[in-house]
Length: 443
Ligand code: TYD
Ligand code: MG
Image (cartoon, rainbow, N blue to C red; front, side, top):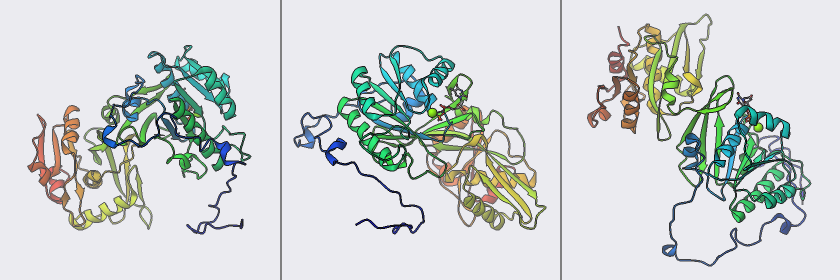
């Protein structure tokens, strides 16, 4: 029996319960039709399986291929999520375009924009070609018919929130429609070997009815991120059955489309004011990829009774902890100071190795002593001010050396086991206090 629910019995929140409409007959949903490939579904000994590498279509866009794990896998279902206006339609259209050169046919289903708008974007991007078929369609039954007619290698659904399965009564964009549409597309993808890209909008709070409900169904979940105010876009694999989730692709949104940024560190540091106090460069890792970022700290006397604490790009709790450690262990007095921390370029840091960089940026700002422009800083801070080991130091220092940095302040335990890259001097430190000396942030 149905019962009225205002409040979710499991999480206790109001308004979190969503109505789902079921299809009339379960058989009509495409489930229970047998295995995906409908070939040999008998159990096989594991040893008898041959492990051929997954065949892939390289898109020719190196940053995209890397995030996908080496190219598009035939028959895979890829969810491309991101805020509206971030560039999802742009990147898939560019990928379809690039794939034409390899003889790959794509069918781009625009369910959100008109064909006119699509054409305008294509002109802007310089996209053309007859292996790229487009259709304006929201009804998935008719999409299936178009797929039969075109027999594409790649299918793009832009977006999942605007297509619908006519067998369901629910409105497009509702949980039941989004889920049913995705499961239908998945059967089609697996059965016909069509790589399918599903575009989905995610609101900042990750709306429940949004593509989040699909994450467990699809093979790959990519998120396209970036600040509206900045031209940089980061493509991140959140889940990938065909590759690592540690890879990112970096792009810049320009007037004629997305341009791949092969050397993001150089871009991120391009506008750095050298020898300015409060600026520290940290070699962080985005997945397995080293990335040099500038951490900016500002400590300024507060005109208010309660000083402000603002952190952008780093966790504010972490910043609170680091300032407390600096006060206690390195004798830094932040009392009455407004504190701001910012990671330049709109990058989000979630790397304990950045702790020391945050601390030194703030101390350097407070004492007005610049950290030398050719020094990088890395290390995790413990509660008593000790500098703790971090992982993967070699690729981090390698990237720093490549960009002309000549000194590194780093945990002593790590430094002892390391051969520094050529031309780089190591300053091993055990405590925040020692790090201030090594970074010349102490007068
Ligand atoms: P779009 O791909 O439509 O975003 P989404 O599909 O994620 O909603 O891109 C939207 C923004 O990108 C739009 O504000 C205009 C900008 N843009 C450029 O700056 N250069 C370009 O070449 C294109 C196509 C778009
Ligand atoms: Mg779009």
